[in-house]
Length: 450
Ligand code: PEP
Ligand code: CO
Picture 1: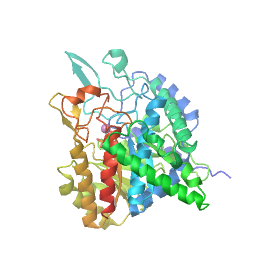
Picture 2: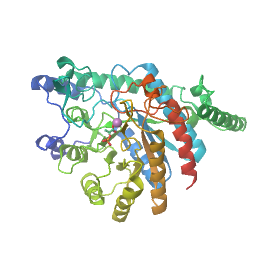
Picture 3: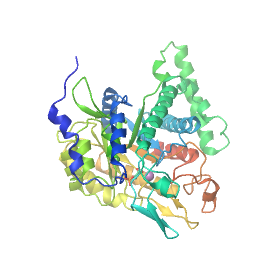
Picture 4: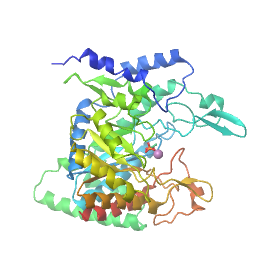
């Protein structure tokens, strides 16, 4: 039996169109946009509402301290880089981090990629000027191209379709990798192959050996291993480009309620979370679990007002507050925010993004971050929650599975000069594979101090 939606609910999905919407492109050809969105409306959903519901329950558990969220991936995915190797390496990195955390802290880890849809970027300026030439800023592959030419930088709605298809093929590979045997804990050693000379990899290999032994012991006892052979891996991206999110929204036939089926989890960014804006209105009307970034200017009252709009009834797992204060500010600013939300009583899941408050420019001119600042913000996040008796529920990380050199420090000690070796990101600097594993090992220590 399918449940018909309330017509007022469906109509409400277009209310954002008459509200101020930050960070949207100026499409030069509205007819072309309409043709593309009509096509997107007819294409199959990328995820199912029931999967988003399962994730909501797991995020609720993370909010209670019964699980831990690990959300990671590129700052901006690109069409060109959505290759099998890149996708596999990112999944492998997240799975390795999850193994370290699960084994080290004896806590289920909810695994989520900033993947299969992370193509739209907020920018501080609408335009970019080079040598006297001004063009629209690069807003992500779903909108325009990175090359500094009029042709590339002009927003092109055909890119919405390419984003959909690239997301679909990325998700297909994610589903194949995580259910087809690759993610089986019986193969935990293989994810590390070829890297084992470095200290973080050596430590990983030791954990993998212990897991192997435990699994062989349980197999000898006749235990059943289905739960070890596959993992749930969720997709997420910033819900930024409403001309993409709206046509991918579907009515769940079980309940008659709308879900944004472009990803399991959508978050509202630091630059688009204004209460009267289009983004808050739109995501108040879909039933996915929703993240909200909270930067250093967010007050407790802002957080409460956002809950009033997005989760008035206090449904558990619906709201994840992703705080990104900066290492120097987290210990000062986070407590008041957490106290106010805790006093309100409606449950939220607290997650730390230790990336976006810690940007610097290197002496050599690269946009970078220090690994030590990233770790310090994570430590501050744990300290604040421990001292208030609230729950540090997860991490939101920009990472890649490759050996790039974009973030300073880590045990490889990437320095200002070293950044030039392999700096590949189009937007924000990402932890490389080894730095990601190091972070996981350090977070285990923080989780154990519960
Ligand atoms: C991001 O997550 O890439 C991002 C732009 O973050 P924020 O909205 O927190 O600045
Ligand atoms: Co970023």
